[in-house]
Length: 161
Image 1 (cartoon, rainbow, N blue to C red):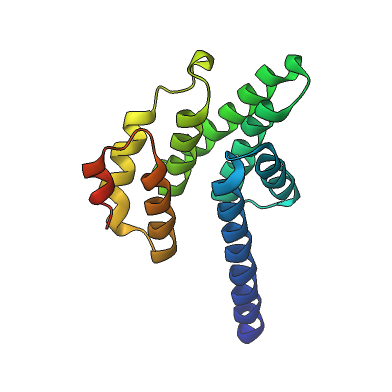
Image 2: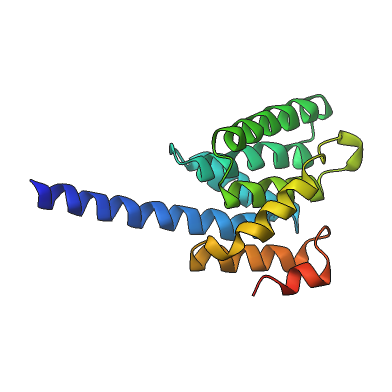
């Protein structure tokens, strides 16, 4: 019985990490074009998980949907729903660096007029101070994000090695 549970756990973790890697890759391309955004949104919509990081990407997809929707009346709703969800996830998981990366990315790329940029410095500080304690895959992802970040200085980017 223990062997069966162990095998199930290993398979679950393997597929979970594959889902996460796919979301990370799609998210990194989402802001470059409407096609990239649509691909990320579709991928995020297909994911059903209680993992807060996957839920964070789903929240980012809701916010990103405001960028590509043709219905101007829905834009505010998409942003509000996604931002509320992302804030709730971070409140419940305050030490999760990847959720902070997601929020920082959203806040860097959302138009300033929306007013969703109050936590940029907090997230930047958190990411930098907790970088060394992350796993290798997340460190690579954080480094890639930092290199294109508008908020991080050159010195801060160089500190993430």
